[in-house]
Length: 203
Image (cartoon, rainbow, N blue to C red; front, side):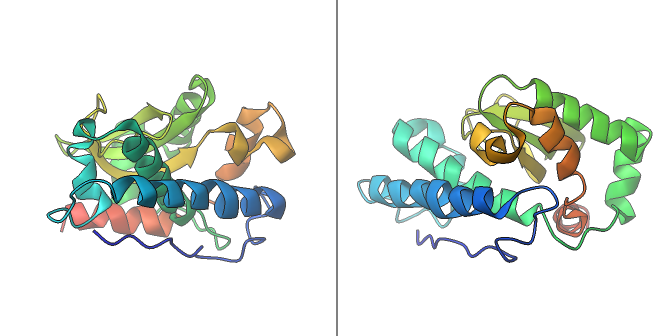
């Protein structure tokens, strides 16, 4: 298994509408890279010849030591998180919007439900929109750096969208006002990426 540290899909100061460049710099170059480096160190100690990627690793993450679970999750979750944001916002469209509105009646209803989960999550973690094993959209939360691809996650599924609610994601600008960060985040959501993820399951 060969894992490379991913490039940001945009300039580090391009999400300033929601996330200031200092936070992005610390989050990407310090936190994210730190998880990557610690994961590489931890994974080198075990045999992963038959494992091709992180998604495959997560299917049996419970058999590995905590440093692989925590840092592998930190690496994957952040990589996914960066792609869930864009400086070129546009509204959600297509089959994903249809599915969201079928379940939550309106986009506003979905955003409120997702925001409530993210706001009320205790301590550090993530809020996810996933397609579960019954091929239904669900909003779930995970603690620390767990994710819905892991066998330890109570509700498993295919990630469509994620929001990081660790304090280091927002504290420089928003202090303890997590809800203010979440409200601003909706203006930079990369719906194109989410739509493409969803479409891969329903071709």
